[in-house]
Structure formats: structure tokens, C-alpha cells
Image (cartoon, rainbow, N blue to C red; front, top):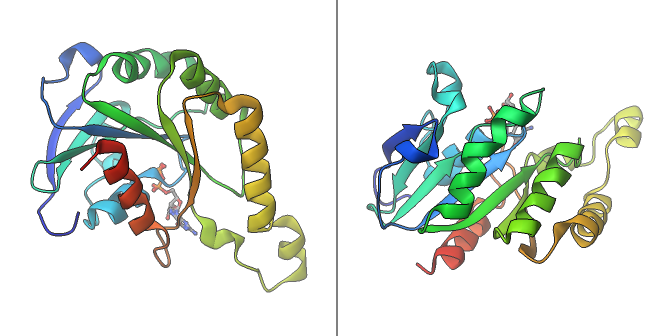
Length: 206
Ligand code: GDP
């Protein structure tokens, strides 16, 4: 991931306009603001690479980045939630269902906010369609013991979060979800990024 330069490959709003290719692909999904671009930048070890919000149009697109000397492609899917539910899904689901070199979706969850209805709907859709996916917790630094008592009471403990996530996986996760839940943070310190890289390599057989 760090040895070769990262290259922006393509951006597409529709499945039909995605260029052909044979390189394995993994896709990153999550609610807007979940920390997806931060995780992708940490993974690619390139700061502004996935910070697409400043580039007009790119936030609505699926954006592909070539890493590892063109051996692997990472897909940054548009963030969902905030009322964009209907328009969000179609092209992305089409990609996840039909793209031959797609290997696994990484579904990001902010552990402070937990699962929202739309996250559950997506997991159930993945289960129905047999789309392989794995859950990744973002921003887990926020679960570190806060100093003030008031904040401490409002912040879940990491063990509680894992229990909740395992419960949700059991009830809504279906057969296509991978059991291992990854805990990451991208700032102020990076945690779990190498573990996520290993999971990507395992998913793609690289
Ligand atoms: P995206 O909309 O899912 O791409 O989210 P961003 O990566 O742009 O992050 C959304 C906000 O969360 C930004 O203000 C980031 O600074 C913050 N953020 C992202 N990752 C982390 C993290 O690991 N820890 C903390 N504390 N904040 C984070």
C-alpha cells in the first residue's frame, strides 16, 4: 500500500459507464461523515487523495483508486443518509451485484452514533443478494476514556460497542457478512489501518 504511488483511475455516476478491467476491487461504503475519506487516505498513505468533497461532482460518484502498483483497486462509494436514500442505491447495488472483479464491501460504522436504520437496510440488502461485506468501526479514538465524567457517561465503552455490533450482525447481518469486525481510527493517531489492509489482501487473495 505504501510502496507504490496511488493513482486516481476513474469516477462514475452510473454502473454502465465504469471502464472494464480485471484487477480485483474492494468498495468502501458508509453514511456521510462516517470518516470514509479519512480511512481511505490512511490506507493509501496519501493525504488529500480521497478528499473528494472539494472536487465538484466527485462526492456523488463512485471513485476508483489504483494501489499496489496497479494490483488492486479501492472504490470510494458516495456517502449515504441525509435523505438521499432512494437515489443512492441503484447504481451502487448494480455494481456490487454485477462487477466481476468485486471482492468485498467494507461497511463503515461510527461507533459513537451506532447503526442507523439505513445501515441495517443495507446489511439486509447485502444478505439478500449475497454480497460479501465486512464491518469496520471508524473513529474509535472517540471511545477512549474521556476525562470529564459527563462525557464518560455519554460515550459507550468499546466492549459495549462490540457487543452491540455482534448483536446487530446476528439479527440483520445475514450469511454474506464476515464475522471479524475491524476497529480503526484515522486521526489523531492511526489505529487498525494495517489490520484493514490485511483484510483487504485476504479478501482479494493478493
Ligand atoms: P466522510 O464524509 O465519510 O468521507 O468523512 P471524513 O473522512 O471527511 O470525516 C468526517 C469528519 O470526521 C471530519 O471532520 C474528520 O476530521 C473526522 N474524522 C475522520 N476520521 C476520524 C477519526 O478517526 N477520529 C476522529 N476523532 N475524527 C475523525
